[in-house]
Amino acid sequence: MKKHLYGDSEASNVLIQLIDGHDLSGMENEVTYIKEHFGDDFFLMAIEVNDWDHNLSPWKAPAVFGNRDFGNGAAETLKEALKEVRDDGRHYYIGGYSLAGLFALWAVYQSDVFDGTAAASPSVWFPGFLEYAKDNDIMTRKVYLSLGDREEKTRNPVMAEVGDCIRIIHAQLDEKGIRNTLEWNEGNHFKDPDIRTARAFVWLLDNNL
Image 1: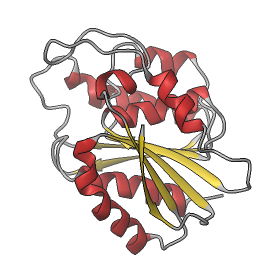
Image 2: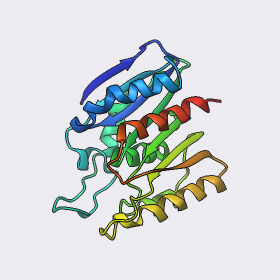
Image 3: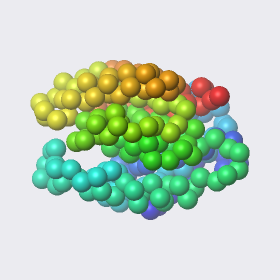
């Protein structure tokens, strides 16, 4: 998996983000936004996956759009991401957008090494994830969730469940006493993914304990 590095490699905050080739064009905008709204004390490592629907899916699931089913490559992807986490006293955060946002949320049910997760417009409609979140304990202190206010207004019956799913997860986190927020952004799923992801990371950084 190819890594793209941004910011100060010696910073006390390390942001790990899963991306694909389409996300690369927005990374500079994302980094600029974080600098303007938080400062320079961060190092962002963008890990580029080759097969989005396989590398970021926690388990196999039938296709929701198109004809290609989801794979189960998230465990291997997380293993690669965890290689970048050091026991060096720094704060590590994991994040992403869309299916990468789901991956980032799923990851903190798997590992306790991250101080927070930035799940921007996460694909929480993913078959079986709501049940998984209900039955398992999250292992991080801070969770950022967001969604576009038009995302649940889609003709796809599975993806239309995203609004209800994210509200339920938000409520579950409140009940468990996990520090979290759910931010609603204007527009559909495809509006300003770089800025939405940046805002997710900024919230985590601003709410550092």
